[in-house]
Image 1 (cartoon, rainbow, N blue to C red):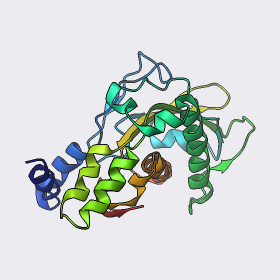
Image 2 (image 1 turned 90 degrees about the vertical axis):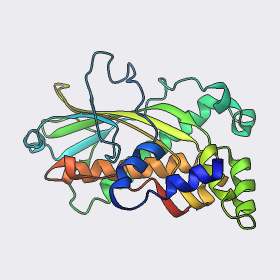
Image 3 (image 1 turned 90 degrees about the horizontal axis):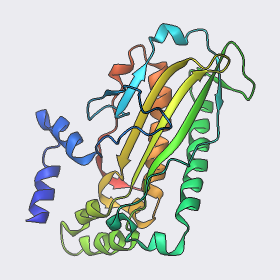
Image 4 (image 1 turned 45 degrees about the vertical axis):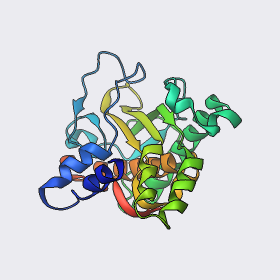
Length: 249
């Protein structure tokens, strides 16, 4: 029944079922943390939008800004793992706080990479505040490692027993972050967002052989979405990649 349910889920990949599949395969939006602000009202976005909650000032308000400061990623708001999420060899051999710090460093470098490689050169990265400069502050809110050993076993078994490899969907990790973009001088907020994603599902999921590769892939996609949204004439038109693929690595 489990395999039948998974195949039924994947079978909704065409026509009007796409939105339903986005909703089922992507992680639900997470509660807003104190990093963003308890009293902040963020709009829930559609399941196929890159960020799950967001508020953004009109694009015209971004026009005076040409530079961006990226702060070190805050990892002090990471939520405690559930019992099932703790049941992972990643947490037996590694310090969880250090894992979050490592992911925070990866997130910072990923957003820097995306902005430096932006073909539109929308922002020049800087470390100095100014009237034409914004500040991006990011925080890791959740970090769940992939159950890599189970995924490796199930992927290998899937070469001999069709469908077993799809069980890796049940072992997926998850990562969530919040972001705030402010004026570097007066602190006025122009953009807030939350992002959360499980590891992307795949028929052959090589990324699932590592505890945090799926999370790193999601962070890379968020960084690219950030650049795409800031460059888009209408941010609403940006769409997340489909949450299932043939090969994820």
